[in-house]
Image (cartoon, rainbow, N blue to C red; front, side):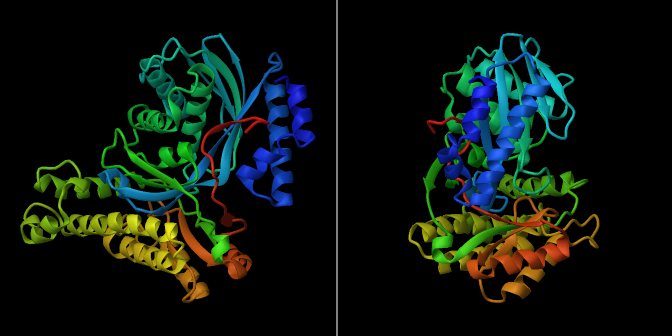
Length: 428
């Protein structure tokens, strides 16, 4: 669409229906998003004045609800896309290059004549990896100029990297691949780029939830063809809202902490001749604990025990929501938080035991909520965010209390977004 026509359409609320679907019905939120999109289009026009026709895209962040550190062991997770997203304005051409200008970051280019991993670093490596995988799958990719801006803040625990990967994958699939890949394959392509090009050995959960959207139960037993069950649940209808608190503790130097969890779990699986814990019988595991101590650390054994509990719990949490049993769900969330703290042990890093922002946030949340709602570590752990299900009538006070401790806007109320990575059109 012509840039001026697009600006007029947004200004005249022709995109209101899709905005309401993604961001909710709050008048203040809808006005914010309207102005956000207008500003993004205007910024694109200033950066690329030679481009006249553009399209707009969006991909969400995600929240992990159940299944803490289970995905990398081919386990089960319960997660949801959220209303914080990265949006992009794009113009397409045949210059043979992808140009990316992201708010707050240095712009870069990726030549489509060289999408190898050699010499690529950072976000440019991610874009190269995604383009390379689409080409390997037979897509004929052309270039595009891109301006993007994100509400999924880096380091906030809502997976800004997966949102960006989904965004790029959605743009390429929509515009150069006739949508043949689809949400599941886009997620796999994003994981491939992150694993192979960026060098981060992550599981598939983040990309899958961002790409698929909604509330999603995923069984990764067959990682090539994960079992995906999307469903809906209105937490506010049952008296609760979802809050995420960013403790603003640094993720720097935590790579080894994250890697150790996977490595230790897999050391237990190796005892049984298996590549991951999902292929190990829970009964056989507990029977083998005395023997396991000969080759595995005690912490590895304890973390493996967390996997078996948490994998089953993710299934039970999904079932509880499907049966509208909010109280049983909250009970399971509390158990998940306890298991992460005592078995998985990902509340703080042993490299500096004095920095315990996650336990502090959980302590303050429990003090405020008392026996209401539920709270747990969110995502990878060690630093970053916590998740709380808070009674609606207490939400504003809870957010205020957490902001006093961790800073302005540290705590935010989220809503579950029903769609994943998409092109934003009036027809959505």
